[in-house]
Structure formats: C-alpha cells, structure tokens
Amino acid sequence: MTVTQAISEASLDERDPVVRLQTVFDTGTMRLLTTRDDVGVLTAAGLVDGTRVIAFACDATRMGGALGAEGCRRIADAIDTAVRERVPVIGLWHSGGARIGEGVAALDGIGQIFAAMVRASGRIPQISVVLGPAAGGAAYGPALTDIVVMGPAGRVFVTGPEVVRSVTGEQVDMERLGGPDAHGRRSGVVHIVADSDTAAIEQARNLARLLGDQGRFCPDDVTVDTPESDLSTLLPAESARAYDVKPLIKRLLDEPGVELHAKWAPNIVTTLGRLAGRTVGVIANNPLRLGGCLDAASAEKAARFVRMCDSLGVPLVVLVDVPGYLPGVGQEWDGVVRRGAKLLHAFAEAVVPRVTLITRKAYGGAYIAMNSRALGATAVFAWPTAEVAVMGAPAAVNIIHRRTLAAAPPEEREELRARLIAEHERTEGGVNRALEIGVVDEIIKPTQTRRRIAEALAAAPPARGAHGNIPL
Amino acid sequence: MAEEIRAEMVANVWKVVASEGDTVSDGDTLVILESMKMEIPVVAESGGTLTQLAVKEGDVVQEGDLIAVIS
Image (cartoon, rainbow over all chains, first blue to last red):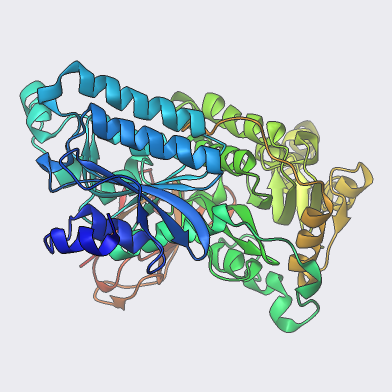
C-alpha cells in the first residue's frame, strides 16, 4: 500500500497512526512495512534528516491502541529489523495495554516486545514517544528503551486511577498519576517532556539524528583564543557562588543539545549534542541545584546516561564542579551508597573516549565518581583556578589541626587558623598537587576548552561498550 | 496556578533578594541560601507576582520548607 492510499483511507483523526508516523520521517521517505488493518500496530521505515530509521506506532483508533499477539509481533519484528540494519528505532505509544479478549496470548506478545527491546539494548538507539496513555504492559515498553519523550497527553502507569482507588483508596487522576509532571519531575521515567505532540516527535527526530548519525570530530575547525571561546566567563567571580551550568554546556557544544531528565535530579545535567562536529554526551554538576552535590538520584541518572552513551559509542565530556555527596539520613536511607556505586561502576567500565574537565572544584568521594583518573578517564583537564581536594581547606584544617587549634589561646586562634588554611592550600589544595601526582593531566586555558576536549576525544581509539542499557 | 518554591536541602537563608509584590520572571533570583559552604541562589521557575516570601535572612530552612509563592 502506498502512503497516499493509506492516508486517503484514514480519517483526519490526529491519532491516526499513519499521520503520526509520517511526522517522524523526512517528507516523502516513509514506506509502511505492514498493511493498515485492525491489528492495532503499524510499522514503517524511512529517513530522518537523511538517516535511515525504523518506526512503529500503536493504532489508537483501534480499541484504544490495545495490543494483541499479532500487533506485538509487528513491534518485535520492527525492533529486530532495526538491529539487523543497525539503525535507530522510534516507537510511538498510545495504548491501553493488553487486549483483554486475547487473554494470555496478548500478555505473551507483550513479553515478546520486552524481549526484543532487551535484545536490541545497547546495539541500536531505541527512542519512545508517549503520545497518549501507555498503561499496564504498554508502560514498560517505553521504560525499557534508551530515551522516553512524552507529549502533553502522555500518561504512563502500571495501574490506572480506578484500580488505585479501589485498592488503596487514593483519589488521583491520570495526569497526576502518570502525566508529564509526575514522570518528568518525580519518577524519572520520562527523559524529555514536550509541550506539543509535534515538539515531542521533533525531539525524537533530533535524538535519532544525534545517535544514528554521530558524525566525526574536526577539532581543527574549533575557534580558540577569542573572547567568545573563553568559557570561564560563565563562572561567577565569587568562588563560593552557585551558578547554572547549562549556559556553559550550551557554549561548549556546537549547537544547542538535547537535555535528558531536565527536571528530575537537576543537580546533575545530562545532555546529548555535537562537539566539533561529532555527537558527545555531556555530564555536568549543576551548582545551582543542591549546590551541585551528588546524591542518590543524580548518581543514578548519570550512571544510566554513561552506560547508554558507552553502549551506543558516544564519547563523554564530564564537567566537574562538585562540593561532595549530599549528607543526610534521607540520603543514606535512599541508598546513596548503592545508587552512588552505579556511577562508579558505569564510569569504570566505560570504554568510549571520556574526558573530564574540572572547572572549579572537585572534592572527596564525588571527585572520584566524576570520571576521575583512577576510574580510567581518557584525559583529566583542569582550568587554572580549579581545586582538587578531599575537602575545602577550612574544613580540612578544622579536622587535621583540631588539637593545635584547641590548644591555642582563644585570641590567637583565628589568626592561627587563617595561617594553617593558607599553608594547607599551598601544600594540598589548588591543582598543582593533583598535577604532581598525575590525577590531573594538564591545566588548559579556558579559551581553548572546546578545542582541547575535542582533540583528546578524537585522539583516543574509538570504542563501544559491549553491554546493554539496563534502565538503572 | 500558584507555584510554591521549597527548599531542596538544609540551608541558612543568607540574603533575601526579592520582596513580596515583586513581578518576577523565570530565572530571577529570589533568595540566596548558604549550604555546603556555597551560596546557592533560589530562582523562580515561572513568571508572575511574588505573593509570599516565607523566609527572612538568618532563617534555617529544612528540606521541603516553603520559601516563596509565585502566582
């Protein structure tokens, strides 16, 4: 069937899967892989900015997009085809879950989708766009993929408001239970919240382009030593002042990137974009939120991002300005040890080129976790004013020289403390000691940041982790 | 809809920058907290009128405490 035929048969219903699939592809490049019928799923192939992509869509005009065995087989086939062709797959979700009338056969089908997604995990980029409800089994479909984009009408939940009410007595509507705010801000299920369906599809296209056609590094094209290339002007003058790291990431990249999990665990920023012509993944502490501390959720968010990039062969840039791990009973009970360990594991196992830049400070355990030399960083750079230490000098002096300070006469104590802090900064703080022992490779000029990072990434042998991308 | 801005972590209120009744836009600094030896601006995430400012300089806020309301 041709596309024109398919459309002429379809109503102008905006839920129409052919209409939706067409918006994924470059004009005139879509070819349906399955016929339009009552199965409830359509699959298609075509180009996204010239890159081949496979896509599938639930047919919300047939039983609310409910999935039966045959529809599930189509989705699994589409994913397997994408793996064979080594191209990205985009799924458009709008489904009430399994077709109840088909019983266990439908459940088995949904299980087959999950199995296909896991087979494909880490081998091809898998992007989900949730345009309507994705309930029950359909909730875990997007959740198993690399990146989930949600439109304004997207709703993801395992059990709907009715069941929640009858079991727990909680009164909640679909939006509060599983809408963009619930998953974009609270649960972390959704990576990107879009304010229209068109914007959601556009983000999926951006991601398919960034991950499907990653480009190549051309470091020589990067401008250096101009006022515009001085990225350090984006840091505040006062060293203790927090700031938003996002403008820094924007200036680091060639063009605005795609930020994932922008509202969830915002104390770390994870962004895909191009640097010197090639796709990279940027991980950055954001001092504006929680002072840029690492905590349980942000470590987990970054760990998943690192593993996704590693499995898809995307080099990493790590921007470090971290005061430490967030202290507190809440954090410990939230599993900051277990979830923080994921980030250590993710960086230590990553084989893609990965360069660290310490912009201002790197303290304590958080220093180690942010792609340190010990965890196998390709290169660790620092700006001239950066500080690498177990903790800030005043805090360190209070611990190391506790007895000396206590023994000093009260009127001399503050002067002694100031002297000890200056002494500590000279011997232990700053970045020179880190250079001496080789945990920082080089101090770079802020005006050469883009060029030097691109060169270091380009010089490293390209590699790709041989593992899936479990949704940590 | 009113937007409530709450403390993300335990902190001292170091400086109050905005006042009740001010018109604020997305990204404007309302107060500056001091925590983890850093000065952390609390910024508006939406535009509107600052209808309530629930803290004053020197206060200690716990995680979840109300700082301001924008509507």
